[in-house]
Length: 49
Image (cartoon, rainbow, N blue to C red):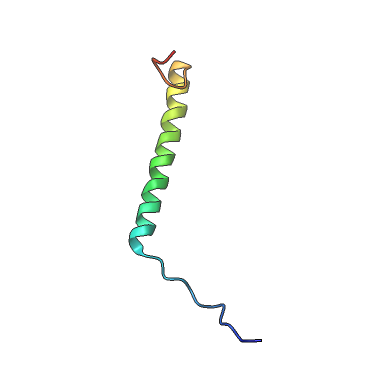
């Protein structure tokens, strides 16, 4: 059996971390907008029958 070092951390590009964080913020904003639209109009997509 070979000894492997499991303590090595993977190097993740900072650009990918930033992109994923912005994607999460956009998704959260969309969910909040969806709840707000439903609360004010009673429709999931206002104006769409």
